Image (cartoon, rainbow, N blue to C red; front, side):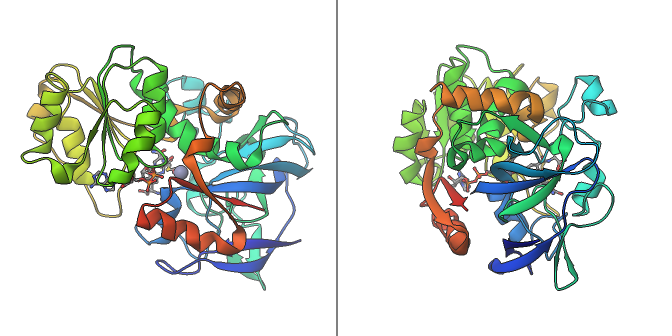
Length: 369
Ligand code: NAD
Ligand code: AHE
Ligand code: ZN
């Protein structure tokens, strides 16, 4: 079938809106009509050419919501008409990782996902016979996409697509990093580096679990009012800190953060996020993704003296199990998504979403179809 998609032909170039050919679902796959998709900084990371796994041409997008319109042979867990959120971290419930109960990083289809193809090794997208790569197993910058059955979470039908699409990445990543990865406890002091689409959800998660101080660090002063509404108690703009940022944060937290979260993708900040943690127990969680060739460093003494460095993907969430619950939290008014969706636009204007991200004007842009 013909579908409308934003195609990334070349690193660093704007996306091109095209009519693309999409093959129907094969065994254990589903065809989803995408109704809305968020634009995450990770899409920009890959579009820019910084992603070591980036492939071109590709249809980016991994923060979607839509409706199952066809299923391939063998599909049992969803049916036509079901509302779903695509999962870049699938949940097969059968692989070593899923069965371990120690991680959400299902390995059933990770290898082919990284190669930009479906689990059988082929792509469903093409233009005039030329192959177009899938992205993160989702490719939600298209009005229809094909996904493996294990990579969709069935959600309730009264949830608005243009809001709950954000649960497909940013909301779940931020709140999950607090609840699943760090397991922040009530009364803890938390420092959040980067108050964008992910960091504000970390702030929201920290408030949910009853954190005491929630300190936000961002270069953009416009982030402060919204972050305060989401639970931030102190704002630090590194440009306005006279001396050393780490020393300032250690003082603000009365000896160091119990937990810190790096939500930017900057390796210098990752170091600062670790080093502002409390001696003996402070835990720093890396959420941001850093470009090809970049590495983190610190004095090993930071770890010897009890600080812990962790990372999180999709907030440690098991998508098919946890995503429907987070949709319920939103529908029950327990979490705020609407205030973070600052811009909505049609697919034709998707490049504006990247401009708004760069200018610091948007928190999340959502494309509706
Ligand atoms: P965003 O662009 O919405 O937000 C980034 C924020 O960082 C902005 O507010 C910006 O002003 C701030 N910032 C930039 N440089 C800074 C600096 N030097 N000091 C302080 N603040 C600074 O991006 P996002 O969508 O929130 O994504 C954040 C990061 O998380 C990206 O690296 C993204 O790829 C990554 N991410 C990771 C996961 C995961 O599963 N691990 C999931 C989603 C996104
Ligand atoms: N391809 C990059 C890594 C990108 C990355 O870490 N992605 C996160 C999700 S970001 C969502 O916005 C993730 O889930 N990672 C685990 C995984 O298996 O990809 C690189 O550096 O190669
Ligand atoms: Zn994302």
